[in-house]
Amino acid sequence: MMLELSHAGTWLPICDASVLTPGRGMAALLPDGAQAALFQDRTGRLYAIDNRDPFTGAQVLSRGLLGSAAGRLFVASPLLKQRFDLETGRCLDDEDVSVAVFPVRSS
Image (cartoon, rainbow, N blue to C red; front, top):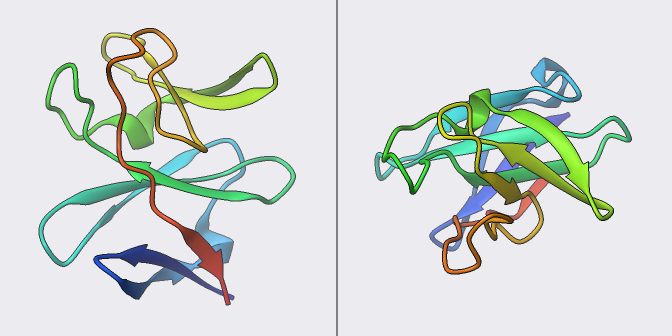
């Protein structure tokens, strides 16, 4: 199955869904030069958020550790450890900060 991500109103083919490892992230370069961080949880659900850590500007969120808090799945930035909700993009450690979330599907 092909993993697709919606960006700028278009569904983009990213990779075969089998290359994702549950619990680990993968980065994808988008046509406009932006990057997305893709994740699959242990139940098979897919997530995609901006790969850019808003606190440092580094493209590293795909390398972060997955965890959960209050039933919400998050990725913790590998640099300063801020946690970002994978469904909403909201930073769990600073309510004024968030990252973009991309719709993602497998077809």
